Image 1 (cartoon, rainbow, N blue to C red):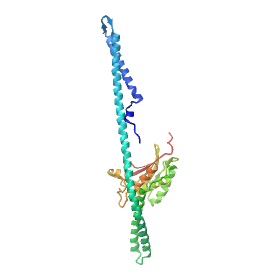
Image 2: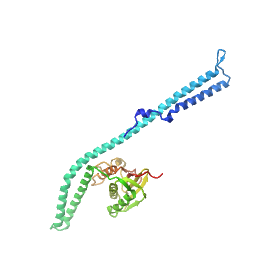
Image 3: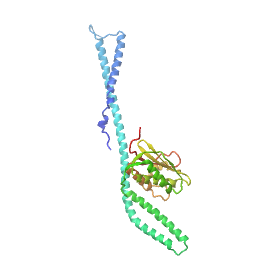
Image 4: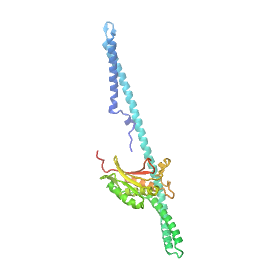
Length: 327
């Protein structure tokens, strides 16, 4: 990121440099009007026997013009100072955003290294325990209901831990997206088809807003992010309430939105939803949204929690268009 230097920013813009001349011209006109009025009243200036009224009037007007020129230069300098201050403030804001993202990236990298080691150590023992329990449930001589029920509960918890370790591994692995020119409608249609099976009968309302619109993205990663958002929306929405998926072109981006009818995200927690290990769901790992944002940014997109306008939460995946929209 580069920002203009103070010396460059302080230079007056071409239009601004004309201010001194406009001020000088206006002051000269004011002086001319004043001297004309004085002359019309019959006032004369004499030096001895000579009439020096015109010379005095010209000197007076020149003084007015010089004063106006100086005022114009002062106005230009003040405008340049304002532009410099605005440029520096914008540069500081951009620098703060970059520093925040770098800090987040460093945090994710550190978490990812730790997570990779933990996932490696935990994955194999979990697989062995799961396989043993499954065999025990199938071969137990005891009445079938209780051992199988107990083993099923333990297996479900092992599966949950396996999902957590997989998410941890997702933080640790460098994302290598395959960015291509892809049809946004195809990404959305694929997501909707898989989403209906993922939601297991929960209603999915699809609003198709894009026809032939190409985006620069990794279609697989885009679907993965959207499916994760649909899964979260399905868990947040009350039974029977629909989950919504829609997409639109906004400026130079295609925006895919996933909305639920759940309790939403409290205002004081909105800035933290993408932090690793932060979650408001019982039993949640707090890694899904962190990994999803990482996948979105790796392919040149953005993942955002939009301002609340109705019950529930709305997450938006923004992908750059392959070509600018027609004017």
